[in-house]
Length: 374
Image 1 (tube, rainbow, N blue to C red):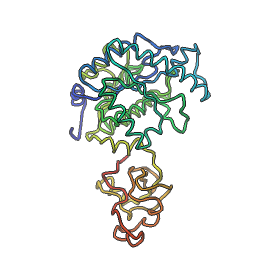
Image 2 (cartoon, rainbow, N blue to C red):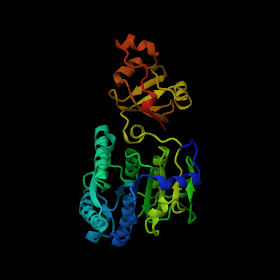
Image 3 (tube, rainbow, N blue to C red):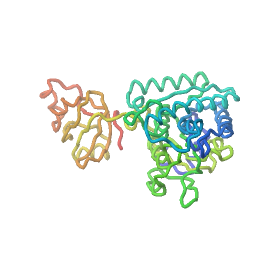
Image 4 (cartoon, one colour):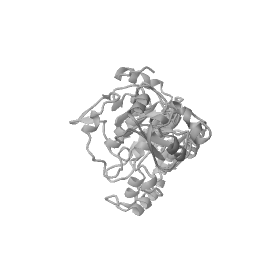
């Protein structure tokens, strides 16, 4: 993949993708009352099953548990308290999976429920366990249907929307494309669909309000942010309407449907995506202007000489946020030294590390191979 991709080039890449993540929003599969639209779910199951029969690995991230719960209980509005939302999600999740099971069974595709929280992505061991589980399901020919575990998640361990989860799963599986299906045709400008958004184009968010569906937890701003997360790592992202006829096939065929986000030219490895996007930094390293230039412009590793301050407590191998003097994050990476050691060697030359610590295991505090720029 080259350094620059345009609309034509990106659409030409879509028919060749082998791994696809499809995110189904609440508005994609529920009516305005929150009841599951079985006809729409069956249509999507038919289209997704066709991708699987064609040899592609497909993973679905599906919202709708709370919406389905509201419909099952015939409630008009989402409740406000967390316990009530969790209870409704528990009721709705069963209805959601039953609908998916029945729809995909018509095409001989087995479905598997995978419920996750933010902690599952932030912890490296759990992250790898999820990836291994999803790969095993693919090998068995089963379709994983992922949802945030709303029945147990609290604010501290939840993303609050499945759009972000879909972007993380895309990176985890090294998928080439992430498709968001919702109740709108894509990103709209005064009611007109924008066909393509170039990588690095920041204007799309100006067209989006904070509005979201009555039953969902995301919204277009959430989808755009998640799409950017995916494209910054080198994956194609598309936002489209689930009710557009043959929408999945048309997207994969490179058709002009929905809004396509052009990816960055360089694809990050799953490991670097975890460091840069999924892991939660345990501390901060404040670096001087010279270090910022070396990291951003020179592609260098971070040395102790460029560190002005260390905040937080962290161990060797933890993820840290690297910020400039103004507090702007310029990179994230895995540190070779814990916070106590860094407090002693910050500002020093690499050859002075052994004099202070008694040994020098690494010249670099954060090696370039363990770092992603923001």
